Length: 276
Ligand SMILES: Nc1ncnc2c1ncn2[C@@H]1O[C@H](COP(=O)(O)OP(=O)(O)OP(=O)(O)O)[C@@H](O)[C@H]1O
Ligand SMILES: [Mg+2]
Image (cartoon, rainbow, N blue to C red; front, side, top):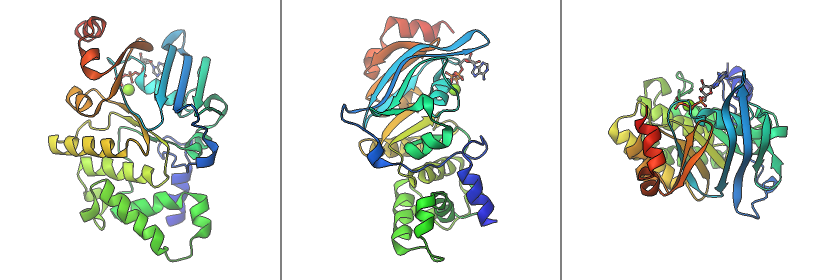
């Protein structure tokens, strides 16, 4: 049973089981402060350009928000970064040296990019603590060094991560009994166990209560710096709460970029949102 779950966690090619890869810190060259560099990325689906010469640069430690109307290409952009979709043209680099267009999904996860899909995929019949334990065990390197009993160091790391994602009190609760928001946090905790450099979060606060949304804003703000985050969200209150730089996508390209208030007052952005 446990083995199957670990295999499920490892099988990152499978959409139903996201890949929790481990970061290879020394492999990422951040000498130019840029953690993600997309240049002229185009993705066509039967002639329709979901991404059309998209160019985007994210600095290490940044918390970047990406907004834009339905169909703008936000999720497709994340698919390209994580290797789920191959661009027809363009360049995608992680740090200075890692060419994402040449890596498979598991290799990208392993290189240090973690992705959270909208629907939480936690192991409902396991406790919050066990979920993080499983996420950690999906890491082959940790697994090799672990004996039958979880080393106290690992237990401390799990406990600390549970605190980070506001589940310190819920460590022993079955994941299936957690609220929707808590499940989302648990999945973020599972990603964090792999120490990703870059976290991609697609509509993370959808379906959350106001209090959960607020707590998530605090969480993301606290993760920035040590991690880089790209957050796609339609909830503008949430975005204005956490945003430093906001990128507006429209028809597969960047329409505007800058501080939230500047972007919100940009006539082109207003037109795109009101025109729908
Ligand atoms: N696999 C696919 N095959 C064909 N068309 C696709 C595919 N994936 C996405 N598209 C199209 O590409 C466009 C961009 O979709 P995408 O999901 O990236 O938008 P989005 O900005 O994430 O929108 P939303 O805010 O609704 O989630 C849409 O018109 C969508 O229908
Ligand atoms: Mg989307």
